[in-house]
Image (cartoon, rainbow, N blue to C red; front, side, top):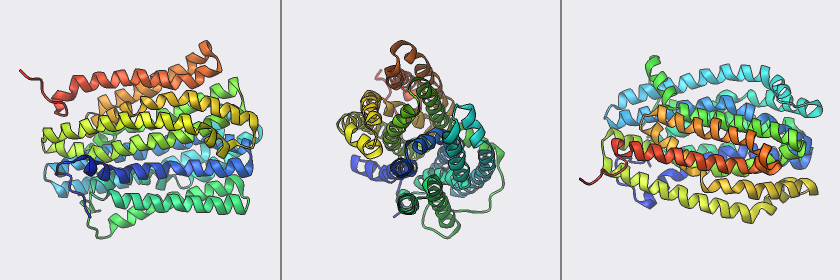
Length: 448
């Protein structure tokens, strides 16, 4: 069933509409988590640390898919809201092809540079060799990983978020099955984990290509589309914040790893890896909700339906508030269990993981606001404000805190830094929302 974006969205309708996008993001994050789970338990903590050390380098180029997907879907959804479906299909087709070409170029660069970059970051010996091996294999399927991110946004704009969820479910399930077979049964270690991810990414990006090439019942389909540099530029600029957010998250992860290698060593990197797996799932919930609700806001903005914009905005703020509290409580309760699953074989590493996890989890109370705020302004076509929120949050607040706070608080300063950064980011996001909300129409005008 194709979802109608012009209707009024009750709580039930909004959650049903965004649920497939949330599930898509969760299953996408499972790729790395499943790899880490099997590598840690079957190949040891050095290989596990290597996977977590190289992962930010892999995620940086894949962020291009977020940029084109989120920025492009805002343009396509707004164009549909204005009533020009033919132009929407041309823009959609051109943006997907552009993403594929960018993915190929970045994959070649990644294969060549993965190991040298890890060496510059401080990896040595067996850990460096493991980083290079895992990274080179993973980069082979990067073009399809980029396309998977592109299509995650466009499936929502096409009115078929449930199809996007099924695609990611298939890809994620294949990753789990192949990890169990190649790593758990056949003992192929890092190679098996990387190949499992290759196959799942091939499915995640390849199945949507076939879907939109064929005749389908969605709002979007591939058509003959000339290259439009202006539209690509607008999409890239508009989606820059999402790309910056993902790149910055990876950069911050690199800084965390550098600080942890300095203060603790491989155990610190391994503990941070476990924390990041949980953080990836929780962030995926907010990212998925933002991705799912953004085309609705773009459509209503194009249609100038301010009451519905206000309805979606209010419900979104409630969602991120309640979600943040729930994530914090769940993290505090489940810290022991999560540590047992990933590093239960090492008592010292287990204790470090539990303690750091509980400190880090305070950040979940605040993280959803800036994630949603950035996506909100992307949906309204204001890439500048969206990018400002993302840049300040990650490259200034998070990076600055992780570098400076350990100087004052020692090791615990590393884990506290994320919470301080998220509080500062919340303040910035609220300032932008209050300053621009009435201009765009998602806040009610003041009574005269």
